[in-house]
Image (tube, rainbow, N blue to C red; front, side, top):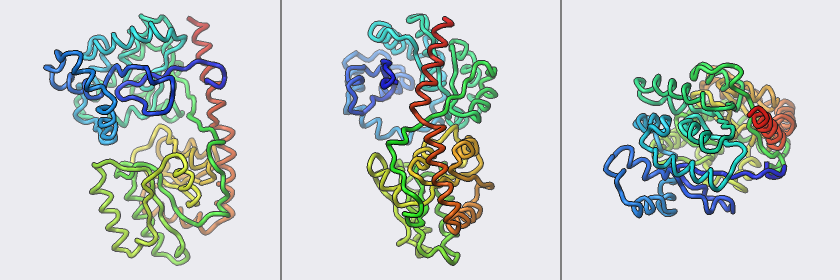
Length: 402
């Protein structure tokens, strides 16, 4: 959007954006993760002095909180979620007022785009203060809400439906998720637009599968929810067959402390099957390390147990010339069909995944065809520059209708 001549200000919520960007260095953290949590759970902290809040929201403390963010669980945060959705009626009224006043005084925006529907409690006050259209994206909110205590789920979905009335437009990242959220939030077809996520294909290095070893890759958090154990079991099955003596399993994507026991169990299975020399976990997975990972694999699978709203790793893999093999869940069939760079399978079992891998790894012509199609399909249909133009067009139409 900036390349197209527009000004964009990113405002972090609970944690700062630890990035080398000049536009975020002077933006306060209005909902500091630590202080917001303490005030919600322990009311005594709501009377804490300003210097104490400032200490909790300092960069060193925020870095500690960020290191623990991956292990945050939805269960147990039901009251916090409801309070945030209540907006000015919730326990974070002071934080909301501070944020709204700062945005109104410093940004003078034409559009405000909220990153997800769990923050819909911000919308009414923002609109009252700025008078501009408010847009909200939808992506994987159901994963958070559906993990909560069942007695809270219905209340939260109803709150999200009510607060959505303060919006001017809602954007889903896939048709699959648009339909999912229409049902859960009781939204009409007219309220929800689908605008796909995208990547800049120039940021990735396309390498033909003809020039790579026949290795299988996994790139996501190594946890039960993302099916890392399914990948390990499928690999063990694959290696029992003749003709795959050269194939390795290379995994990356990081983990949290909660995953340590689970990962140890996967390593144990690999060791018991004498495959330790054919298994590698890459500790780094960003920037150049990511490119190095894609150079080493001929296909990628992340067999998540619950279908996702999108899955950015699919685009990153295909932009690097790596076909994806995914369960037919969530938006995966939609993305692979549009891009042409992957195949889906069901059931989501190690046996079926292993069989699907075997069929591809023994068919280099098909593998190369998927590789080329995925690259071209990502470039054509999931191009971040095209999507920036699409979202600006939506913003402009909302401004005209004000």
